[in-house]
Image 1 (cartoon, rainbow, N blue to C red):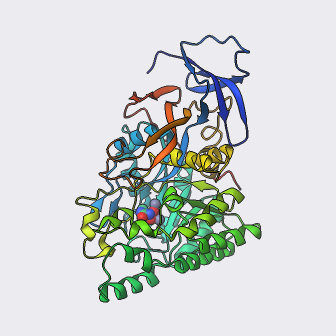
Image 2 (spheres, rainbow, N blue to C red):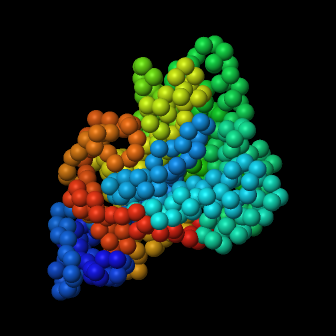
Length: 465
Ligand code: URP
Ligand code: ZN
Ligand code: ZN
């Protein structure tokens, strides 16, 4: 435990989803206690950071990560220790990871296993969602108990038959339970059975390179599943959060539902905003680095996603951080794209890439903080403890230099993965200092965090409802 009880951050531009103001920020015992006009209060503090010329923003909330996720024949390469450290380097101070129900087992056993992986290892605070691989009488009965423990969101898959897949009846039943209990259903919306047919046909034609992963997982099959999920949620009277939206046709389904006033929400990820099928088509199997599901889309989908973020048809940008090394992991799919483990690294890059979007004119500063901090905190029951800077909030604070430039690269990143999906991309803006509940985790290139500082966050239900 640090001896420092009072920290003062002076002179920065405080940016939250709601406002921007030059202010001093006073932190006491891990909590923000006051903001005041610069220099107006003569606060005494043991530790002072001068943030003149910098932004002072809430720590990022990444609501979609997969540390240590078993996938096919392998396991995602970041542990809770390495992944949360990398998150902190990138200005993220909260993650919400996905516990997985092993098929045929209970939700409880999956949740306990995830607690065991994370407990005592995280550098920053974390919450857990629950992946339901097996919706049945017994697992449906378990849902209220988990909600009581602060696991208030449940991911279902319309993809991956035989693995995570739920059929429409199972989905409807889980949604009915969500509607009764206040849980939020998170949906991986792709028509898995149809995709499996196209995979089989592509392989039979000898189409084996990574780019075919993008071709068989068609935008229309994302849109169809999104539409179906929305209608099922309407029938059940439950809210719906669609994860990793990549296709403009799927976004159009969300927008139409929201125009009807339905409680339907959407998330996209940096890879869909900054990368495209051009990356999937990179030669010499390099495209495998970009295999994830939903897949990357042709570049012209990006404008629709940026627009969706501006118009609030999409509320959240999370990373779906699910790293697999190129050597030995992505390589499992050489000669058969369907065996490439699905997922991209990115937990360290999200805040910077979205700040770059501010520089490029896609987003305002406040919208940057909204989609990266406030909205995910609200969506998953963590606001205002997380996601904002206000008296009473946890002192999860990032001092951000908006003018510093740096180049994203596997040579310098901290994620436990041997490539960067953004290799060589120079971004404007850089994390300078990171506090997690008032403790300094990172300061001017020096990592000061420790495994076990981060604690489990029991969450309330969705605060958009
Ligand atoms: O390709 C992905 N997205 N891998 C992680 C699992 C998932 O579907 O989110
Ligand atoms: Zn998914
Ligand atoms: Zn995911």
